[in-house]
Image (tube, rainbow, N blue to C red):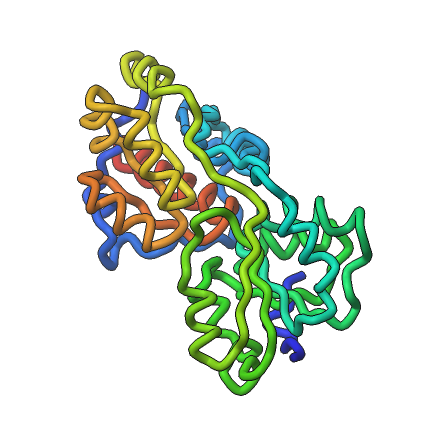
Length: 299
């Protein structure tokens, strides 16, 4: 199983442009390339809902664009209660043809247990769902990772030729994931003839706090946008905002890097969903383009 070169990762006017109210043609991902004005987000307050340990890159990007980032984690990543299965699989890595990591958290948590026990098998191919996870693997010394470019999800990974039926049929695949993860990846690989095993290496949980911090910001007129990067995080955000915050959520621009998250947001009654390109860079550029347009309309 070998990878092709293309898949190896290496006081403001109101923010109410009509075209940002749905996930129609006008809300396709904003281009991530190109320089945005360093003042594009001047005076704007943007909530970053990533887990605290993963928020740094997006926070820095927002600040670099002149904005004020407001950390508001809606997910916590915790160790699994019993790591015995994870430790055991370390001894059996040589039995597999392909290891798939579903997220950067899976990389950190799994390799945090495995690498102190043994080195990564040289012949074991590695795949993941996007560039951020691929970079995390590289930081752990694993290069030549199979990963999609642009989109970051299981569907994009499954579209790669390296995971076609002709490549995976009869092969053993190990998927590193969090508790209760999506079944699409494993089910599809199994349907293509692969023998699939899962190992859970972290838990996701909702933080203990509520939405009081957001309510205070809304009351002061200091919350211009919210970024959300997962469907579970979106559900937690709505729950944490509570009944008092729900109406405010409906009228606050919500920036998401994946159409699936946007669709779920609209199903939850959130009206101002803006779809951006993938990753933190895509979110930052989407924020910059959106508020540059808003400022232009208000000038």
